[in-house]
Image 1: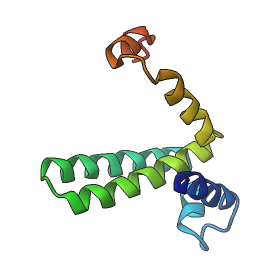
Image 2 (image 1 turned 90 degrees about the vertical axis):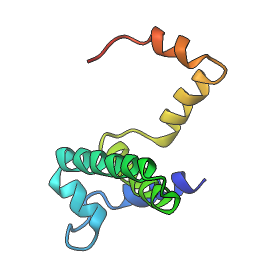
Image 3 (image 1 turned 180 degrees about the horizontal axis):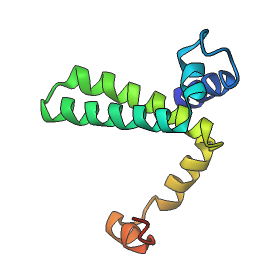
Image 4 (image 1 turned 180 degrees about the vertical axis):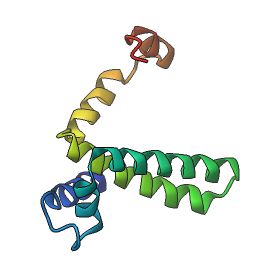
Length: 105
């Protein structure tokens, strides 16, 4: 799966020279910067969606997924951990699943 391959690539950039790689520069700048980039890309995806701009929705979605994978790698979360959660939720009503979660915020 392309996301698993991309995760391996971003994971391999941990500890690399920040001048040699954009991904390494994100790790160097820390979790707050990585999270900020996830938020920026999510917002850009929303704007593209509201503007009904299919090309930009796809492009911004790719950017969002990339930055999300960098965040996961920084937090030592493997994609399969997330895939397992999705698999556990499969077949469960979204409303039921959401109601079963503890309120965190």
